[in-house]
Length: 528
Image (tube, rainbow, N blue to C red):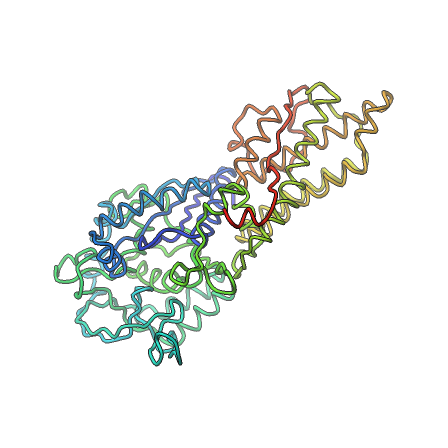
């Protein structure tokens, strides 16, 4: 992607029926890493996140807590969802709430257009409804439980709770008209839905035939009123999906919308169907471009089950960051899990990777190099002399890593990108071990060689600071300062990070304290 191109990326907007767990934070961090990378590449980047505040689930939660839905949403947003962004270091450009006037106004513009153009009609509907998913379910989405609290009842496969049978006079969106157009879209743009497993599932779903979508509810009143029939409120998913457009200016700022849209959507695989079927059909009906891509990542598993508050497997992000810090949180979940696949979380794996990869691998490397420049050259970066094959090998590693990391990011393979960058960490550690600068320092005749080795190591660290800044922004900012760089790290073009010779000899280098301090035991971490 050439520098300067628009890159509008979104997370799902999350239900405010409860506080966030690390599954929500995982999605936020993934989108943030991609946004930071593109922002640092000079692309016209915009990261949107937010909260979904309408619907029956929120209404019931508020009533159960003896408050109004709006008061409940306000409290959860202020006390839990906005703080989450700081907890895991999210640099979002916008935060939208579906109770925002800009959103509700844009939704009304969209609804009226579809109604005027004949894509919405009134009809009867009866079906199985999961309040947890806020979705009508097909029989193959349900299970009949043989025992337990819900024995003999149909339950949602995702939430494990009984569904309800609803019968209403609703308004419908003529989604069935877009079945072939959607299949044509999937064929003409093979990367529209990723990864491949999610793409195949969506295609099979659409090939089975699309029904028109019920888009209103009359059994409760917490939602956006249908403009031509105030007895109905808009179906929460139809409302929520429009946030991606209303936040970008749809219905309020045509110039901004033209600049930002279309977007890339990062979502959990369980809601990919809404984003890859219903959402593009809605946009087609309105005559708007479909999203650039829908990426449905895997689930975080704890004890073999999807992260869930209702099943008591939820872990609050601060339980990790209070002990390990936000950088370690970001690094671990982006490196340890293949983005797009399910991944299991364990305190033991987190602690082991923190110690081996962050503390001993990257952090110790940075501390050693800056300390040796301080010890052997009074804290002034020496200039290199003639490069040997070992030095040139490091230069090739840096150049290749930068290129491979960017290619991986374009495929949203965040884990592969970090693995490519980490070859610099591994090769530099090996380089220092074999070159033995502490031995070279004992021989004045090898002063030039010592200078070359330490310059090479420092340049490698410079590339690491740039390339890793989207993943571990706090640690890389400290490293950047220790390397004596006055220009902002965020202004360093990430796609040029592999170019050699950026650090100027004579720059003042300061000793770096441990970027990732030692954490004594896993038991202490798990109890945080």
